[in-house]
Image (tube, rainbow, N blue to C red; front, side, top):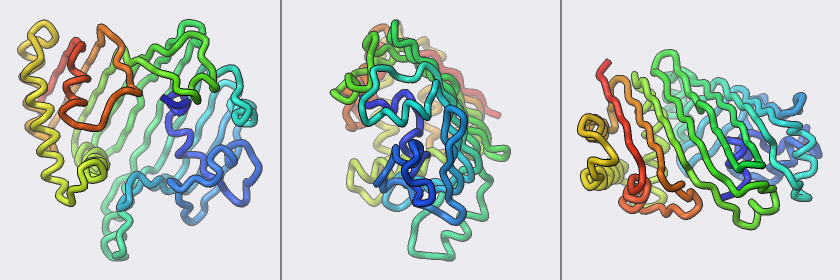
Amino acid sequence: MRPFLLFPLLLSLAPLSVAAAETPCADLVNGSDIIQHVDGFAVSELHDGCAVTNGLFKSGSRLGWSFDRAELKGDDLVAFLKSISAKPDHLPSWGRFSVEGIRFAPMMDNAFANYIASVQQWPMDVSSSFHFDAKDGYLDIQDVQLTNLRLGKAALSAEFILPKNTNVQSFAEGGSAGLTHLRFRLDNQGLFEGMAVPSLASFLQQITGSDDPAQGINQLRNNASTALQMVPDSQIDAESKKALLKFLQDIPHPAGFFTLDLAFSKPLQIGTLGLDAAQLAQTALANAKISVTYKAR
């Protein structure tokens, strides 16, 4: 694992700006090629934080996500950024971020298609916070929440165990993080189709090489369903299994309210997970206590 686990979206939301060169926020991602500038792009420093306006985050070769404004704050964050190249002996104990006006941005050589895709969207907002106790090695990521007034809401919370008294240098040299608890909530009114499916299709295309996103998503759904069928009753009750199977079957159009709660008896080591869909599903479900609800709107 790398230090970005402690500062969600930090590297992607604070790009280099010529106008803001040699500032900690801008210098953090000097030379980054995953952020593109759009009209009005700017990066600035806040009290214990950074702000970026009008950026475009590239999440694949054919798509990206534009945003109006992003803010990130943390425990003495600006001072931390100034010293990050020297690998400071501590990590921020808390942080908060928010991104406003997020829109899916297909990067096609077709001005008409790009324009239609942009005007047919309702922008989304995302926010979250984290708390890190270095002494105990406890990281709590609280409600990474995405909201769209027309399309619904999704939220993700997670708890991790890290090496006690870890620091930037130990992470840079290959630190680890074990996931102990994960909770996902979805109120879907089109949010899943508009936000998750494009990124998922792009991810599957990169790891499989297939140009047919339907084939990749169908295969992922089948692999997850097969893995779930092998999970013993001691890990998931009958109602939860039924609800999760129904949710998987409904992808890419899950309807209504969905919650997934995973509690791992043995921390799931994130840095060791591979990209094979079947193996990923089996590993994630191997030692998890699973609770699921899925109700139609």
